Image (cartoon, helix red, strand yellow):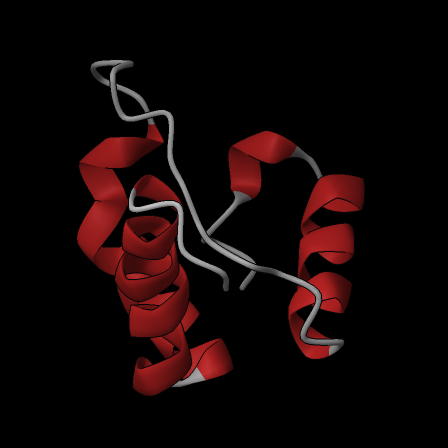
Length: 75
């Protein structure tokens, strides 16, 4: 996930990878209201996440679990 998170810093990236490896992440979110930032590379970032955690887990973390939070359901 080297290119994926270049602008958040090496320590933060290592922490995220460790949390993903330990299944300690409940959902993924972004700060996409910032125009002209790394979000211009969103497709690449999604591909890297799917490669790291698989498409099923990515969908769970990026869509299913956030929707459960909105609906006040247990994750």
